[in-house]
Image (cartoon, rainbow, N blue to C red; front, top):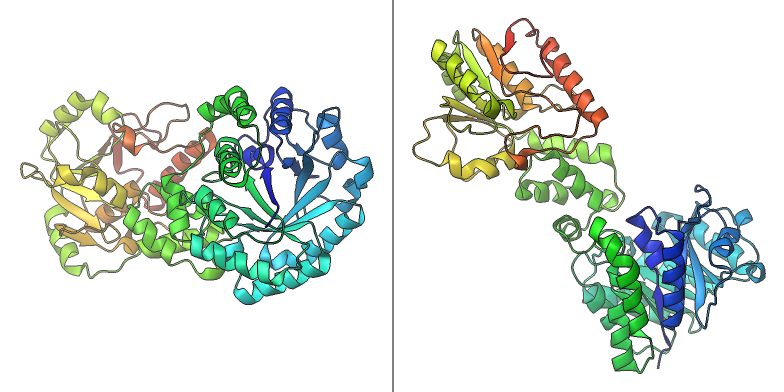
Length: 531
C-alpha cells in the first residue's frame, strides 16, 4: 500500500490572490497551525530573485530569507519546502540544505523547458535538498512527450514528480491516464504527486480518485486551506485531511486547520474572492488559458455564444500560452462577419441623406438632461438614432446596434411591439431574429483607433457616407477620469483606470478628426469628446 503524504501550499498558491502579502503574523499563524495539524509537507512560499525580502510576504529572493521569517519556529514532524518557477531564481541564491530551513524545493516548469529544468533540479539535489519535479499544464503533454519526461525524471531520481493540472482541465479518466502512465514508468522509489485546480469543481473528487489507486509508491496530494489559490482555487486541504482520517486512518488535527481558516483566511476571502466561477468554467471547457476569457469578457461586446466560438478557434499550440496580440486578432476577425449589405445601404441612404440627425448615447446626461434633449427634439424635424441602448421617455427612429452583449441586454425592449424604432445592426451581432438593416461590420471600423469598433465612430463614419445634414450629439459623455458612473445603466459600465479613460477619450477625439467631422458635430450635453 502506498504511503500518502498531504501537502499544504496555501502560503504559495494562495499568494497569487494577495501578491503573497499575508502579513508576518498571519504567516507565522498559518505555519504553526499547519505544524500543529501534523501536516506532512508544508510549502512556505516562492523563491524568486526578482522580489525583495519582505517579512510580510511569502515570496522570497533566496533560501536565507525563508529562515528570516520561519527559522525560529518549531517545525514538528513536517517536511518544509519552497517552490521555484524555473528561471526565476539562480542556484547561487540557494544555500546548501544543511544551512537552510527548507528540507525540499519544488520546481515548476513548462513543457518546452523540461530538460533545462531537470538539469536545474539536479543542481538542487546536489545541494542536499529533497527535490520535486512539478510538470505544469500536464494536459499539454502528448503521451510521447510525457514518456520523455518520465525518462528525464528517472535519470534525476527526485523525491517526487507531480502532475500539475494548472487550468483545472482534467476529468477523472484523463487524470488516471496520466497517473497510471507515471506509475508504470517511474522508478518505484520516486513519489507521485497531484496538484489540482477547481475550474470544473473536480479538484477534491480527482484527489480522491488518485488516492484510490492504492499504488506501491509514495503519493503526494496537494491542497490549500479553504481552497485558496490561483484561478478557481485548489482542493481544500481540510476536506482532504478529513477524508484521509476517515478512510486511511490518518491523524491530522482538523481543528487546527479550521482555526487557521477562521483566524486568517476568512478575512482575506471577504476582500479577495476565489473558487469556482463562470470565467474559469469557460476557460476550462475550452481548454485554454483563463486570460483569453477575461480579455474577451472585458470587451463587453460579446455574447457568451460568441466568446465560446472565438475560444474554440484558438490553435492547440496557443491555448495554454496566453498571447494578447493573438486573441485581439481572433476577436477582430470574428467580428468581421461578412454580409451583402448593398441593398440595406441603399435603403438607409434614401432615408437619411440630407436629414438632420440627433444622436443619443447611453451616458448619464441622457437621464439628467432629458428635458433639454426633448426640447431640442421638438425644435426641429430630427431623425433620432440611439446607439446600443433604447432610451426611456425619448422616441427614436432608429437604434444602431454594434454590440452583441448590449443586444442581449436589451432584446426584450427591442421586441416590444410599441417600440417604433427600426434596428440598424452590424454583421457581428448574432441574433435569431432578423434586423431591419444589417451592415458589414468590417467596413465601419477605424483601424487607426485604440478601439477599432468604437460605436460612435462607426456610426459617424456611416452618416458621413450618407451625406446627412446637421448632427447633434447627446449622451456621449466620454469616460470619467474620476471614479463615478459613466452610463445610465450600471450593467453597461466598463472598469477603466484614469489613464486608460483619458487615452480612450483622446482617441475618440482623434477619430472624429480623422473623419473630418469636428466642425459638423454639436455636443448639446457635456462631453469629454467635445472638440
